[in-house]
Length: 214
Image 1 (cartoon, rainbow, N blue to C red):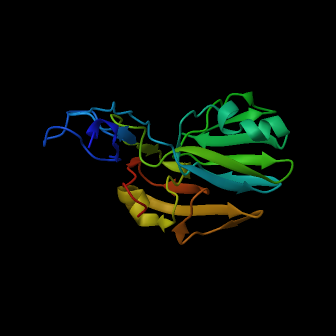
Image 2: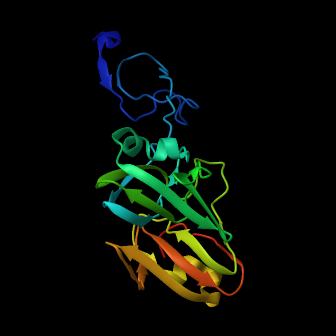
């Protein structure tokens, strides 16, 4: 039999030396040839996608993923294009900043780990694309600083978690914590993906998120 005419299903197998042909991998149907090498194609990691439901009026939210591009023009691209978003505010180290009147562009990015007040003219769904721990390796995992007094923080996970598990050492200095949903403040017992929170602490500190939701 003429082996040169045989088609072999070698998907996900090595062909040639027992140790495998280095970095080459057969990844499709191939025509037999001794020590055949098929080039290995590297695929970039696909960033996860999540959504946040926004109601008309004020929403206290945070990004549960680390965005690929944190520019407000990118994060809120659909809402800006549709004209549904009116204003974005945050409060960091005792200072308000914002996007939209009356702040104009004193706030230009929406980063993970931070809480944001988003005022909507009508309901919409915010699609968030990014990474759960950090950008593809090599990259430094995130950390979020808090100051004495009030801080607007985010919750950087796609599943609920405990307050003490997420805040870590910061929790020992926690004096108050509030969330805001459907036009009313509440005292949370767990932290929810997509929500932002006011926290008051008595000492400065740093939040170091775990690999998985606490």
